[in-house]
Image 1 (tube, rainbow, N blue to C red):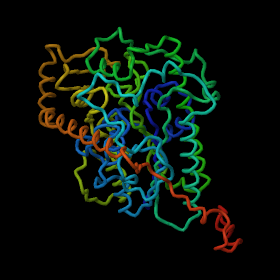
Image 2 (image 1 turned 90 degrees about the vertical axis):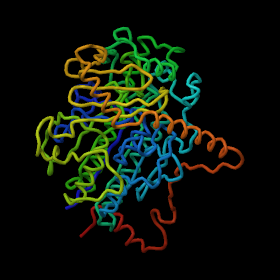
Image 3 (image 1 turned 45 degrees about the vertical axis):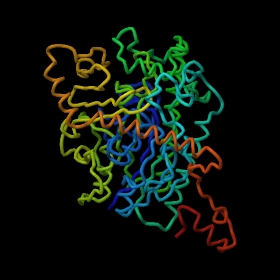
Image 4 (image 1 turned 30 degrees about the horizontal axis):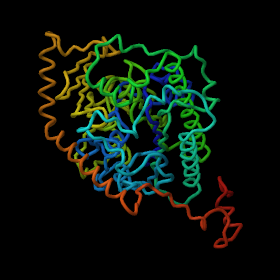
Length: 507
Protein backbone atom coordinates (compact mmCIF):
# COMPACT_ATOMS: atom_id res chain seq x y z
CA UNK A 1 0.00 0.00 0.00
CA UNK A 2 1.43 3.37 -1.00
CA UNK A 3 2.22 5.45 2.08
CA UNK A 4 1.13 9.02 2.65
CA UNK A 5 3.86 11.62 3.26
CA UNK A 6 3.61 14.49 5.72
CA UNK A 7 6.76 16.58 5.30
CA UNK A 8 7.33 19.17 8.02
CA UNK A 9 9.94 21.76 7.09
CA UNK A 10 11.33 24.42 9.40
CA UNK A 11 13.35 27.40 8.22
CA UNK A 12 16.86 27.99 9.53
CA UNK A 13 16.70 25.13 12.06
CA UNK A 14 20.12 23.83 13.10
CA UNK A 15 20.25 20.20 14.08
CA UNK A 16 22.22 21.14 17.18
CA UNK A 17 19.27 23.07 18.63
CA UNK A 18 17.14 19.93 19.10
CA UNK A 19 17.41 17.62 22.08
CA UNK A 20 17.49 14.68 19.67
CA UNK A 21 20.86 16.08 18.56
CA UNK A 22 22.11 17.14 21.98
CA UNK A 23 20.56 20.62 22.00
CA UNK A 24 18.57 22.53 24.61
CA UNK A 25 15.33 23.49 22.86
CA UNK A 26 12.17 22.31 24.61
CA UNK A 27 10.57 20.17 21.89
CA UNK A 28 8.53 17.29 23.35
CA UNK A 29 6.72 16.52 20.08
CA UNK A 30 9.90 16.39 18.01
CA UNK A 31 11.58 14.39 20.77
CA UNK A 32 8.77 11.83 20.62
CA UNK A 33 9.03 11.61 16.83
CA UNK A 34 12.78 11.05 17.14
CA UNK A 35 12.30 8.38 19.82
CA UNK A 36 10.05 6.32 17.58
CA UNK A 37 11.69 7.23 14.28
CA UNK A 38 14.93 7.08 12.32
CA UNK A 39 17.27 9.97 13.13
CA UNK A 40 20.04 10.94 10.73
CA UNK A 41 22.93 12.30 12.76
CA UNK A 42 24.93 13.84 9.90
CA UNK A 43 22.38 15.34 7.56
CA UNK A 44 23.11 18.48 5.52
CA UNK A 45 21.64 21.05 3.20
CA UNK A 46 23.40 21.43 -0.13
CA UNK A 47 23.42 25.20 -0.10
CA UNK A 48 23.15 27.24 3.12
CA UNK A 49 20.50 29.64 1.85
CA UNK A 50 16.70 29.37 1.60
CA UNK A 51 15.80 29.19 -2.10
CA UNK A 52 18.82 27.26 -3.44
CA UNK A 53 18.46 24.71 -0.66
CA UNK A 54 14.73 24.27 -1.23
CA UNK A 55 15.06 23.97 -5.00
CA UNK A 56 17.74 21.29 -4.57
CA UNK A 57 15.52 19.47 -2.07
CA UNK A 58 12.63 19.48 -4.55
CA UNK A 59 14.68 18.62 -7.64
CA UNK A 60 17.28 16.27 -6.18
CA UNK A 61 19.90 18.25 -8.11
CA UNK A 62 22.70 20.60 -7.09
CA UNK A 63 21.95 24.34 -7.36
CA UNK A 64 24.39 24.92 -10.22
CA UNK A 65 22.57 22.37 -12.40
CA UNK A 66 19.19 24.10 -12.12
CA UNK A 67 20.30 27.74 -11.92
CA UNK A 68 19.37 27.97 -8.22
CA UNK A 69 22.08 30.48 -7.45
CA UNK A 70 20.44 32.68 -4.80
CA UNK A 71 17.18 33.81 -3.20
CA UNK A 72 15.97 35.53 -6.38
CA UNK A 73 16.84 32.77 -8.83
CA UNK A 74 14.04 31.51 -11.01
CA UNK A 75 13.21 27.86 -10.46
CA UNK A 76 12.64 26.64 -14.07
CA UNK A 77 9.19 25.19 -14.63
CA UNK A 78 10.66 22.38 -16.73
CA UNK A 79 12.66 21.06 -13.75
CA UNK A 80 11.04 17.84 -12.47
CA UNK A 81 10.42 17.91 -8.73
CA UNK A 82 9.43 15.36 -6.14
CA UNK A 83 5.86 16.68 -6.52
CA UNK A 84 5.90 15.84 -10.25
CA UNK A 85 7.26 12.34 -9.65
CA UNK A 86 4.77 11.60 -6.88
CA UNK A 87 1.84 12.89 -8.94
CA UNK A 88 2.90 10.56 -11.73
CA UNK A 89 2.92 7.76 -9.15
CA UNK A 90 -0.71 8.52 -8.27
CA UNK A 91 -0.37 10.97 -5.38
CA UNK A 92 -2.30 14.11 -4.60
CA UNK A 93 0.28 16.75 -3.71
CA UNK A 94 -0.22 19.91 -1.68
CA UNK A 95 2.01 22.64 -0.28
CA UNK A 96 1.20 24.83 2.70
CA UNK A 97 3.67 27.58 3.48
CA UNK A 98 7.02 28.82 2.34
CA UNK A 99 9.00 27.43 -0.58
CA UNK A 100 10.54 30.64 -1.94
CA UNK A 101 9.56 29.99 -5.56
CA UNK A 102 10.77 32.78 -7.84
CA UNK A 103 9.24 33.25 -11.26
CA UNK A 104 5.78 32.79 -12.75
CA UNK A 105 5.49 29.06 -11.92
CA UNK A 106 4.37 29.01 -8.29
CA UNK A 107 3.35 25.35 -8.11
CA UNK A 108 6.20 23.23 -9.52
CA UNK A 109 4.23 20.02 -9.53
CA UNK A 110 2.09 20.64 -6.46
CA UNK A 111 -1.53 20.07 -7.37
CA UNK A 112 -2.66 22.54 -4.75
CA UNK A 113 -1.05 25.36 -2.81
CA UNK A 114 -2.88 26.36 0.35
CA UNK A 115 -1.22 29.69 1.19
CA UNK A 116 0.81 32.37 -0.44
CA UNK A 117 4.53 32.63 0.29
CA UNK A 118 6.03 34.89 2.91
CA UNK A 119 8.73 36.14 0.51
CA UNK A 120 8.44 37.87 -2.88
CA UNK A 121 8.42 35.84 -6.08
CA UNK A 122 10.19 38.44 -8.25
CA UNK A 123 13.87 39.12 -8.96
CA UNK A 124 14.21 42.03 -6.54
CA UNK A 125 16.57 40.17 -4.20
CA UNK A 126 19.18 39.42 -6.86
CA UNK A 127 22.72 39.97 -5.53
CA UNK A 128 25.44 41.68 -7.54
CA UNK A 129 28.91 40.20 -7.23
CA UNK A 130 30.36 43.06 -9.26
CA UNK A 131 29.34 45.58 -6.57
CA UNK A 132 30.07 43.59 -3.45
CA UNK A 133 30.90 46.60 -1.29
CA UNK A 134 27.34 47.93 -1.64
CA UNK A 135 25.31 46.16 1.02
CA UNK A 136 21.83 45.22 -0.30
CA UNK A 137 19.09 47.06 1.59
CA UNK A 138 16.75 44.05 1.44
CA UNK A 139 19.10 41.59 3.15
CA UNK A 140 19.76 40.57 6.76
CA UNK A 141 20.94 43.22 9.16
CA UNK A 142 22.05 42.97 12.77
CA UNK A 143 18.73 44.48 13.88
CA UNK A 144 17.51 40.90 14.26
CA UNK A 145 20.09 40.42 17.01
CA UNK A 146 20.26 43.85 18.61
CA UNK A 147 16.46 44.06 18.82
CA UNK A 148 15.87 40.45 19.94
CA UNK A 149 13.24 39.78 22.58
CA UNK A 150 9.55 39.12 23.14
CA UNK A 151 6.46 40.51 21.46
CA UNK A 152 2.75 39.92 20.96
CA UNK A 153 2.62 39.29 17.20
CA UNK A 154 5.05 39.25 14.31
CA UNK A 155 4.87 38.89 10.55
CA UNK A 156 6.22 35.37 10.92
CA UNK A 157 3.67 34.33 13.55
CA UNK A 158 0.90 35.61 11.26
CA UNK A 159 2.29 33.50 8.43
CA UNK A 160 2.94 30.26 10.29
CA UNK A 161 -0.38 30.34 12.10
CA UNK A 162 -2.05 30.48 8.69
CA UNK A 163 0.22 27.76 7.28
CA UNK A 164 -0.56 25.31 10.05
CA UNK A 165 -4.28 26.09 10.11
CA UNK A 166 -4.52 25.52 6.35
CA UNK A 167 -2.56 22.27 6.60
CA UNK A 168 -4.74 20.93 9.41
CA UNK A 169 -7.87 21.81 7.43
CA UNK A 170 -6.40 20.00 4.42
CA UNK A 171 -5.84 16.84 6.45
CA UNK A 172 -9.47 16.88 7.58
CA UNK A 173 -10.60 17.55 4.01
CA UNK A 174 -8.59 14.55 2.81
CA UNK A 175 -10.15 12.38 5.51
CA UNK A 176 -13.69 13.48 4.60
CA UNK A 177 -13.21 13.56 0.85
CA UNK A 178 -13.75 11.00 -1.87
CA UNK A 179 -10.24 11.21 -3.34
CA UNK A 180 -8.68 7.87 -2.41
CA UNK A 181 -5.23 8.69 -3.77
CA UNK A 182 -2.39 8.75 -1.24
CA UNK A 183 -1.20 12.24 -0.36
CA UNK A 184 2.02 14.15 -0.02
CA UNK A 185 1.49 17.28 2.07
CA UNK A 186 4.44 19.61 2.62
CA UNK A 187 4.02 22.02 5.54
CA UNK A 188 6.78 24.61 5.48
CA UNK A 189 7.02 27.11 8.35
CA UNK A 190 9.19 30.20 8.44
CA UNK A 191 10.24 29.79 12.09
CA UNK A 192 12.79 29.74 13.67
CA UNK A 193 14.23 32.06 10.99
CA UNK A 194 15.22 35.48 12.29
CA UNK A 195 14.24 38.11 13.36
CA UNK A 196 14.76 36.67 16.83
CA UNK A 197 11.43 37.78 18.26
CA UNK A 198 8.82 35.46 19.77
CA UNK A 199 5.53 35.85 21.65
CA UNK A 200 5.93 36.25 25.39
CA UNK A 201 4.71 32.72 26.15
CA UNK A 202 7.59 31.22 24.14
CA UNK A 203 10.10 33.69 25.52
CA UNK A 204 9.04 32.67 29.03
CA UNK A 205 9.68 28.98 28.37
CA UNK A 206 13.34 29.80 28.93
CA UNK A 207 15.36 31.93 31.31
CA UNK A 208 18.66 33.64 30.67
CA UNK A 209 20.28 30.93 32.77
CA UNK A 210 19.12 28.29 30.27
CA UNK A 211 20.94 29.94 27.39
CA UNK A 212 24.46 28.89 26.50
CA UNK A 213 26.66 31.48 24.85
CA UNK A 214 28.50 30.59 21.63
CA UNK A 215 31.18 27.95 22.21
CA UNK A 216 33.56 29.38 19.63
CA UNK A 217 34.17 33.12 19.55
CA UNK A 218 35.67 34.99 16.62
CA UNK A 219 38.85 35.48 18.67
CA UNK A 220 39.32 31.72 19.05
CA UNK A 221 39.74 31.02 15.31
CA UNK A 222 41.73 32.35 12.41
CA UNK A 223 39.28 34.31 10.31
CA UNK A 224 38.71 33.20 6.73
CA UNK A 225 37.91 35.64 3.88
CA UNK A 226 34.38 34.36 3.34
CA UNK A 227 33.48 34.86 7.00
CA UNK A 228 34.74 38.45 6.75
CA UNK A 229 32.56 38.95 3.67
CA UNK A 230 29.52 37.53 5.48
CA UNK A 231 30.10 39.96 8.36
CA UNK A 232 30.14 42.78 5.84
CA UNK A 233 26.97 41.74 4.03
CA UNK A 234 24.96 41.45 7.29
CA UNK A 235 26.36 44.74 8.62
CA UNK A 236 28.12 43.22 11.60
CA UNK A 237 30.77 45.91 11.52
CA UNK A 238 28.08 48.57 11.90
CA UNK A 239 26.27 47.01 14.88
CA UNK A 240 28.29 44.63 17.01
CA UNK A 241 25.95 42.95 19.52
CA UNK A 242 26.87 42.84 23.19
CA UNK A 243 26.58 39.78 25.43
CA UNK A 244 23.05 40.64 26.54
CA UNK A 245 21.85 40.93 22.94
CA UNK A 246 23.56 37.70 21.91
CA UNK A 247 21.91 35.87 24.79
CA UNK A 248 18.52 37.40 23.96
CA UNK A 249 18.81 36.36 20.31
CA UNK A 250 19.70 32.79 21.24
CA UNK A 251 16.87 32.68 23.80
CA UNK A 252 14.34 33.92 21.25
CA UNK A 253 15.64 31.38 18.74
CA UNK A 254 14.98 28.54 21.17
CA UNK A 255 11.53 30.03 21.80
CA UNK A 256 10.88 29.96 18.06
CA UNK A 257 11.99 26.31 17.93
CA UNK A 258 9.47 25.57 20.69
CA UNK A 259 6.82 27.36 18.64
CA UNK A 260 7.65 25.06 15.71
CA UNK A 261 7.38 22.08 18.03
CA UNK A 262 3.90 23.13 19.15
CA UNK A 263 2.82 23.35 15.50
CA UNK A 264 4.26 19.90 14.87
CA UNK A 265 2.24 18.63 17.81
CA UNK A 266 -0.94 20.19 16.44
CA UNK A 267 -0.36 18.65 13.01
CA UNK A 268 0.38 15.21 14.45
CA UNK A 269 -2.76 15.42 16.56
CA UNK A 270 -4.79 16.34 13.48
CA UNK A 271 -3.24 13.47 11.55
CA UNK A 272 -4.40 11.13 14.33
CA UNK A 273 -7.88 12.67 14.60
CA UNK A 274 -8.28 12.35 10.85
CA UNK A 275 -7.38 8.66 11.13
CA UNK A 276 -4.58 9.09 8.63
CA UNK A 277 -1.61 8.40 10.90
CA UNK A 278 -1.35 4.62 10.46
CA UNK A 279 -0.25 4.85 6.83
CA UNK A 280 1.58 8.18 6.91
CA UNK A 281 5.35 8.64 6.95
CA UNK A 282 6.20 11.83 8.84
CA UNK A 283 9.43 13.55 7.79
CA UNK A 284 10.99 16.47 9.69
CA UNK A 285 13.73 18.53 8.06
CA UNK A 286 14.94 22.09 7.45
CA UNK A 287 16.39 24.14 4.62
CA UNK A 288 19.57 25.20 6.49
CA UNK A 289 20.78 26.13 9.94
CA UNK A 290 21.89 29.27 11.79
CA UNK A 291 25.33 30.26 13.10
CA UNK A 292 23.72 32.00 16.12
CA UNK A 293 26.88 33.86 17.03
CA UNK A 294 29.32 30.97 16.65
CA UNK A 295 32.65 32.31 15.31
CA UNK A 296 31.05 35.74 15.54
CA UNK A 297 28.73 34.84 12.63
CA UNK A 298 24.95 34.94 12.30
CA UNK A 299 22.32 33.46 10.01
CA UNK A 300 23.56 31.10 7.27
CA UNK A 301 25.68 31.59 4.10
CA UNK A 302 28.46 29.35 5.41
CA UNK A 303 29.54 25.72 5.33
CA UNK A 304 30.37 25.65 9.02
CA UNK A 305 28.33 23.02 10.86
CA UNK A 306 25.73 25.24 12.58
CA UNK A 307 24.73 26.75 9.22
CA UNK A 308 24.60 23.61 7.07
CA UNK A 309 23.92 20.63 9.37
CA UNK A 310 20.17 20.15 9.73
CA UNK A 311 17.81 17.57 11.24
CA UNK A 312 16.26 14.64 9.43
CA UNK A 313 13.77 12.59 11.40
CA UNK A 314 11.65 9.98 9.63
CA UNK A 315 8.84 8.47 11.68
CA UNK A 316 6.68 5.55 10.57
CA UNK A 317 6.77 3.02 13.42
CA UNK A 318 4.79 0.43 11.49
CA UNK A 319 7.34 0.54 8.65
CA UNK A 320 10.69 1.49 10.17
CA UNK A 321 12.18 0.54 13.52
CA UNK A 322 13.64 3.36 15.65
CA UNK A 323 17.31 3.84 14.78
CA UNK A 324 20.09 6.37 14.38
CA UNK A 325 22.06 6.63 11.15
CA UNK A 326 25.57 8.01 11.43
CA UNK A 327 26.47 8.14 7.75
CA UNK A 328 26.34 11.52 6.03
CA UNK A 329 23.42 12.37 3.75
CA UNK A 330 21.72 15.48 2.39
CA UNK A 331 18.53 17.04 1.08
CA UNK A 332 19.42 15.75 -2.39
CA UNK A 333 18.60 12.26 -1.11
CA UNK A 334 14.97 13.06 -0.23
CA UNK A 335 13.55 12.94 -3.78
CA UNK A 336 14.86 9.44 -4.65
CA UNK A 337 13.79 8.24 -1.19
CA UNK A 338 10.21 9.45 -1.65
CA UNK A 339 10.05 8.12 -5.20
CA UNK A 340 11.20 4.66 -4.12
CA UNK A 341 8.74 4.57 -1.23
CA UNK A 342 5.91 6.02 -3.32
CA UNK A 343 6.48 3.50 -6.10
CA UNK A 344 6.62 0.72 -3.51
CA UNK A 345 10.07 -0.34 -4.60
CA UNK A 346 9.38 -0.33 -8.33
CA UNK A 347 12.04 1.35 -10.44
CA UNK A 348 11.36 4.88 -11.63
CA UNK A 349 12.64 6.58 -14.75
CA UNK A 350 14.05 10.00 -13.94
CA UNK A 351 13.60 12.67 -16.56
CA UNK A 352 16.69 14.52 -15.30
CA UNK A 353 19.90 13.25 -13.66
CA UNK A 354 19.49 12.90 -9.90
CA UNK A 355 22.40 13.87 -7.66
CA UNK A 356 21.00 12.18 -4.55
CA UNK A 357 20.64 8.57 -3.51
CA UNK A 358 17.76 6.80 -1.80
CA UNK A 359 17.83 6.52 1.99
CA UNK A 360 15.42 3.58 2.00
CA UNK A 361 18.16 1.05 2.90
CA UNK A 362 19.01 3.16 5.93
CA UNK A 363 15.35 3.49 6.91
CA UNK A 364 14.80 -0.23 6.68
CA UNK A 365 17.99 -1.09 8.52
CA UNK A 366 19.35 -3.04 5.55
CA UNK A 367 22.73 -1.46 6.22
CA UNK A 368 24.08 -0.33 9.55
CA UNK A 369 25.91 2.71 10.87
CA UNK A 370 27.90 4.79 8.41
CA UNK A 371 27.21 2.38 5.55
CA UNK A 372 23.48 3.03 5.72
CA UNK A 373 23.66 6.48 4.10
CA UNK A 374 25.27 7.70 0.87
CA UNK A 375 28.45 8.64 2.73
CA UNK A 376 29.12 12.02 1.17
CA UNK A 377 27.59 15.45 0.82
CA UNK A 378 28.31 17.90 -1.98
CA UNK A 379 27.54 21.57 -1.42
CA UNK A 380 27.60 24.84 -3.35
CA UNK A 381 27.20 28.46 -2.33
CA UNK A 382 26.69 31.10 -5.03
CA UNK A 383 24.85 33.97 -3.35
CA UNK A 384 25.19 36.91 -0.94
CA UNK A 385 28.56 37.20 0.75
CA UNK A 386 30.34 35.36 -2.06
CA UNK A 387 32.31 36.89 -4.91
CA UNK A 388 33.03 33.56 -6.61
CA UNK A 389 31.66 30.01 -6.33
CA UNK A 390 32.25 28.21 -3.03
CA UNK A 391 32.02 24.41 -2.99
CA UNK A 392 32.11 21.85 -0.21
CA UNK A 393 32.75 18.12 0.01
CA UNK A 394 31.94 16.26 3.23
CA UNK A 395 33.19 12.68 3.15
CA UNK A 396 33.75 10.53 6.19
CA UNK A 397 34.92 12.86 8.95
CA UNK A 398 36.59 15.33 6.58
CA UNK A 399 35.05 18.52 5.26
CA UNK A 400 36.79 20.36 2.43
CA UNK A 401 35.73 23.88 1.37
CA UNK A 402 37.16 25.48 -1.76
CA UNK A 403 36.77 28.74 -3.65
CA UNK A 404 39.12 30.04 -6.35
CA UNK A 405 39.45 33.35 -4.49
CA UNK A 406 40.06 31.98 -0.98
CA UNK A 407 42.51 29.69 0.82
CA UNK A 408 41.29 26.10 1.10
CA UNK A 409 39.71 24.85 4.31
CA UNK A 410 39.97 21.28 5.60
CA UNK A 411 38.48 20.14 8.89
CA UNK A 412 38.50 16.83 10.74
CA UNK A 413 35.08 16.75 12.38
CA UNK A 414 35.93 13.71 14.50
CA UNK A 415 38.73 15.42 16.38
CA UNK A 416 37.62 19.01 15.85
CA UNK A 417 33.79 19.22 15.77
CA UNK A 418 33.90 23.01 16.29
CA UNK A 419 36.04 23.40 13.12
CA UNK A 420 38.60 25.56 14.90
CA UNK A 421 41.70 24.16 13.17
CA UNK A 422 42.09 24.49 9.40
CA UNK A 423 44.30 21.58 8.34
CA UNK A 424 44.62 22.61 4.70
CA UNK A 425 48.01 24.27 5.10
CA UNK A 426 49.68 21.49 7.05
CA UNK A 427 52.28 19.32 5.35
CA UNK A 428 50.84 16.04 6.62
CA UNK A 429 47.55 16.80 4.85
CA UNK A 430 48.96 17.98 1.50
CA UNK A 431 48.07 14.74 -0.29
CA UNK A 432 44.48 14.80 0.98
CA UNK A 433 44.06 18.44 -0.03
CA UNK A 434 45.49 17.67 -3.47
CA UNK A 435 43.01 14.82 -3.89
CA UNK A 436 40.10 17.04 -2.90
CA UNK A 437 41.26 19.78 -5.27
CA UNK A 438 41.49 17.25 -8.09
CA UNK A 439 37.96 16.12 -7.32
CA UNK A 440 36.72 19.71 -7.35
CA UNK A 441 38.31 20.21 -10.78
CA UNK A 442 36.62 17.04 -12.01
CA UNK A 443 33.18 17.90 -10.60
CA UNK A 444 33.00 21.59 -11.54
CA UNK A 445 34.22 24.07 -14.06
CA UNK A 446 34.29 26.88 -11.51
CA UNK A 447 35.32 29.56 -14.01
CA UNK A 448 32.36 28.72 -16.25
CA UNK A 449 30.04 28.58 -13.22
CA UNK A 450 31.29 32.00 -12.13
CA UNK A 451 30.45 33.47 -15.52
CA UNK A 452 27.02 31.79 -15.50
CA UNK A 453 26.21 33.34 -12.12
CA UNK A 454 27.28 36.81 -13.25
CA UNK A 455 25.28 36.49 -16.47
CA UNK A 456 22.20 35.41 -14.56
CA UNK A 457 22.54 38.33 -12.17
CA UNK A 458 22.79 40.79 -15.09
CA UNK A 459 19.71 39.37 -16.78
CA UNK A 460 17.62 39.41 -13.65
CA UNK A 461 18.59 42.95 -12.69
CA UNK A 462 17.48 44.17 -16.11
CA UNK A 463 14.24 42.15 -16.10
CA UNK A 464 13.31 43.30 -12.59
CA UNK A 465 13.92 46.97 -13.41
CA UNK A 466 11.93 46.66 -16.63
CA UNK A 467 8.97 44.88 -15.02
CA UNK A 468 8.82 47.50 -12.28
CA UNK A 469 8.46 50.23 -14.90
CA UNK A 470 4.89 50.99 -15.82
CA UNK A 471 2.17 48.48 -14.98
CA UNK A 472 3.45 45.80 -12.61
CA UNK A 473 2.09 42.24 -12.77
CA UNK A 474 3.28 40.32 -9.69
CA UNK A 475 4.12 36.63 -9.66
CA UNK A 476 3.25 36.15 -5.98
CA UNK A 477 0.96 33.17 -5.51
CA UNK A 478 -2.69 34.03 -4.90
CA UNK A 479 -4.53 31.21 -3.15
CA UNK A 480 -7.92 30.53 -4.68
CA UNK A 481 -10.78 30.35 -2.20
CA UNK A 482 -14.15 29.91 -3.84
CA UNK A 483 -16.67 31.09 -1.26
CA UNK A 484 -19.51 29.56 -3.26
CA UNK A 485 -18.18 26.11 -2.30
CA UNK A 486 -17.73 26.80 1.41
CA UNK A 487 -19.92 25.77 4.33
CA UNK A 488 -23.69 25.82 3.62
CA UNK A 489 -24.88 26.68 0.09
CA UNK A 490 -28.05 25.90 -1.85
CA UNK A 491 -26.52 23.59 -4.44
CA UNK A 492 -26.72 20.69 -1.94
CA UNK A 493 -29.35 19.41 0.41
CA UNK A 494 -28.56 20.68 3.90
CA UNK A 495 -28.74 17.27 5.58
CA UNK A 496 -26.51 15.70 2.92
CA UNK A 497 -23.98 18.49 3.25
CA UNK A 498 -23.85 18.27 7.03
CA UNK A 499 -23.51 14.48 6.87
CA UNK A 500 -20.59 14.74 4.42
CA UNK A 501 -18.82 17.33 6.56
CA UNK A 502 -19.12 15.24 9.72
CA UNK A 503 -16.08 13.14 10.58
CA UNK A 504 -16.07 10.30 11.31
CA UNK A 505 -19.15 9.72 9.23
CA UNK A 506 -22.13 7.98 10.75
CA UNK A 507 -22.68 4.44 9.49
